[in-house]
Image (cartoon, rainbow, N blue to C red):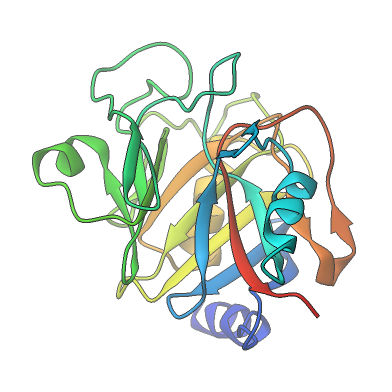
Length: 241
């Protein structure tokens, strides 16, 4: 397994300007994986001066005036019908939506869920632990369920499940210097998706971001997914050139 993790790290070594994205196979399923270093400009996006952004193209339009563009992006958490974030959402140091720690219906309420936090480094923290001692996040998004918790798969994931979907999520390295985003290129179960983060990528903590709406912007791979407007979006900001 060590050689596989080393291969992934070498394949995904980030460039100076953008997250490195590559396709990976694990247990017969295809995933696209994008790795971001803590030195990169990773942000969350939801609204601009004219309201909801909702798409990769709208974010690029917003960044264009400053000579910037997206290096990579994907949807970054669940949202309500009006595209407002579900649970905690912090953008540029401002808390837009409060954390939710109770259980509830749907994937978000399948506890434990968690928070992806962007500070000087990256972290994925179980929501109740986060609420008890909130770190100073520049950006943060809450989603659920957790996929991997301190090296263990979510206890409610069933290896025999027949519930499959396109899924995307994020995991972080133990030292917080790398955030690794993945989207499945075919429908997979929660169990298989979580195993990919833990056993395929060697990440001890990982968070599910969303399912059927999952989309990716990876121009280096010629991929610019489109669809209905999204809620929160995560992406790297790079010089336009």
